[in-house]
Image 1 (cartoon, one colour):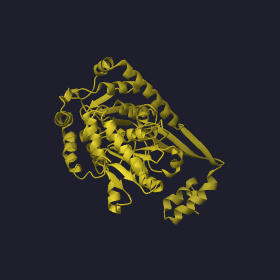
Image 2: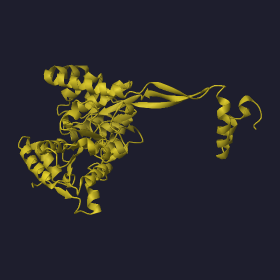
Image 3: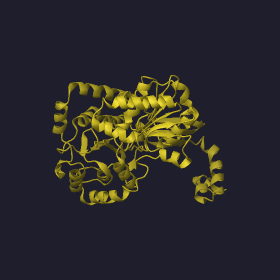
Image 4: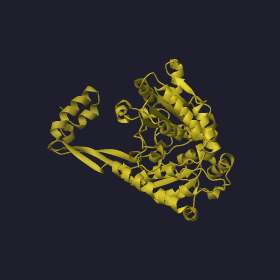
Length: 440
């Protein structure tokens, strides 16, 4: 077997097993103290601080008066892009829009609970949102599509995009085109914790918004955590992570390809093959070495770092029951099931942001053009959190309507419960005092 790390669950103790569940974003103790001064600088100095941090952290030549992308920037970006790329982006946008339109709840529903008694819900868009599009180790126009299109579908009145500037102080061309495809016109050049601070407080150029969504580095996650009392947060989406669950029937080449998919994102990613078959594990490890020959040195370096360390590699389980249990404890962002009988495992897999089943369900297709959102909960939060969706851009109100016919059937019960809890005004509100009489 190669230098890929092997973690045998039958040989390690509980502490070592628990350590395998730790992600880069889990422990932010070293970063959180450093984001405080960044946030304070943006709060007090606004655009000037954003330009300064762009020069320091992004190595970008950005002036305070160039933080907002202009209509001319959008036009130039569209003109420079390859036509085939634009067609593929439009293809993806149509499917993302179609999927999220299917998620939309009805604007309002009312149910007759009893004669003269109606109760229901009303769905409304949130007032504003910032969509964070990372750019640290590449450009990610797909994130722009995935975060903005559901907001447009949900009819959010103000949608802005924040993304780190390019070295020349611009915005990635494909990201701008993605925003245009979605119908978003406000794009601001800022990344990291400073971008979170900008939309949490507002600057001379960047508006303060109600919520921020999108994936980001540990610095972005730390900024969101530090500012959670100032701005609402979308699903927790930190550095990329995946598990490939495979049994003895898995195809070696496809399993190796899937294992490398998320491992190449960066050294802070996490990627595991979880299997009960040692022979398969050895063959997959050898195949990864072959596949590395078809990748550039940067991505090979990232994936080697991930697969040879404590946040990646091969997890050998004593059986597939134990393998599924490890997956559920880990609660991965992406879960790929490689098996000739993959559907049989689905009932056992309760914790994952997405589950991809079938030999043709490549994670890349899901990431770009399948339609479901690829902004998924990370850091184990798939146990309680869901993928980004139109629901993240909506709020609900409950609606009640009680007629004179329905009131007498409810009031005595409400009055009795209010008195038990010691709330006199509550009881009076549904007593004869409501009609100007005496309380019973």
